[in-house]
Image (cartoon, rainbow, N blue to C red; front, side):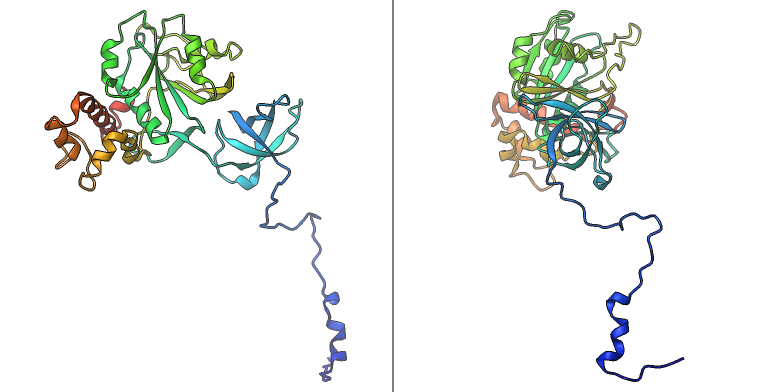
Length: 350
């Protein structure tokens, strides 16, 4: 063995960087990197359907080139959810031609999220739709019987998400809905009525114009029938109510968006329960601006329920300072807040 004793520059010439030997890449592929491409050439689209890992996306919305592309999610998104209503960025083949497939590489910030949980004790949320600004709560006056507590839960979810609720009452030719509607007298709630086989289409189209509206409702209330009336090409499956149990049958199994004029209506599967384990009660109070201003004088942690100690709202109502409308609105607020403290086995299925 020989040793180099010369410390001059010439002694290390054979050890420059060019002499370093690299281990060959047996798979002949590129080394992995944490740097992700910026995808500056991506195009933006709206997700209108989700089906087993394939996403229907509207590209060039509002132009003569508007078309539907089929996409899959990029690995770099990780476990981030993609739901109907999302605005996403696409790369790849976005032509929409048969056999084409693009990739969703980004989900843009959402303006709203309608969510529900499995039950009231479960804080794990399930996103129903993104970026909706209106909610059609479809309720039948009869067959099946209307469930005020389930409607309360829809209202809570709408207020929590910052979505404007609209009540659509179907089958009013079968029963008088006055007693049911009295439950919501204190709310500034727009109400649309219809008979079994006839919907006020012009009025509904005016409401939907320029908005993204999600339709929700108990199974069998006529929600899919309503969507088919608004969008004849939708061909959503329609079920019938069981004559023995009085319950509707689940017919819609997916959440899909349909174009209605310059707006969109999102049809969702019918449900019999609607968990609220994810809801922040403060968001409910914010939807009652007049009462929220008074509630600022309530003690910290006040529930605003009838038995709440030193509640400014309760005390003013008892003193007759809220007026008739104010008392009705407080009653509605307390009904909605009470749904968040009820046992999950009860009202969530009413």
